Image (cartoon, rainbow, N blue to C red; front, top):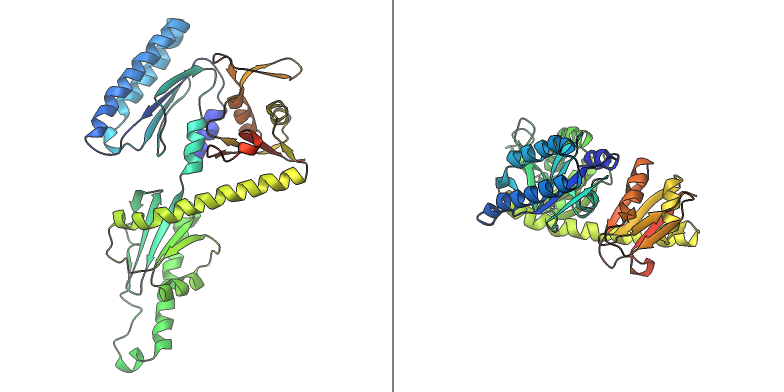
Length: 352
């Protein structure tokens, strides 16, 4: 999704069409999703024909209608975004709520995508025991997959003993378990190197301590939960891991606020939108922190002076600033509503 965001932020050219649809994860509510999408596609078609020459509209409309036909609504999340222009077509399912709407401009409306990246966390779950190790990949409370191949589930068919004299020697059994965990970690590393994500460990406290000792890659575990999960369903596992992930995201937001405070003390913080816009254009932006409901509309003159406006038809300068920052190797973090109240909803940490 990060690569899609960067690609979409780099696009400039009218008409760029963004269709945002609130969707449903479960049946029968999801039966309404294709109906509602068709309504939005029709609205987009009408608006395009009202504003642009039909020769410009036709290729874009073909893309939108092909996207409409392509979407499998049996696997919807909480929302759907379609981005279409003469050169681009992207369909993104997101685990965040949106308001149904169409945006036709010279840029794509990427803020929901940014918010989806900020408010969801992809992560691995490893269930650990002396008998079996499972690997799952999830985001928030949704299972992406449980790995089922030659690597995982990894059942312990070798690192144990039936010798009674050795069984009563705790240190011998512990060494076998640690060897088993070491092999498991080597298998897991291949997945982590392919896609580095934070990790949640589930299992008996003693087993988790042993497993973490064997992990070659440190500081990637964001939480643990105790118990035996050898045969627990993925659905039940995610009921346990999701609160851990939510706490992790809350901690990340608090860390962001600390970064902002430090930048303010170091005089590397801009909170006036005009200053933020000019810093973005100059390539001085390190990280923009912005509330998900913040908008700044207006105009910019030849000297770069920003004149904000309440006119809902004025250009969305927030989107211009976000696109510019992303394309000049800066970062953008979407915050919850009210998190940046003391900064009026927006704050930019500068590089110098």
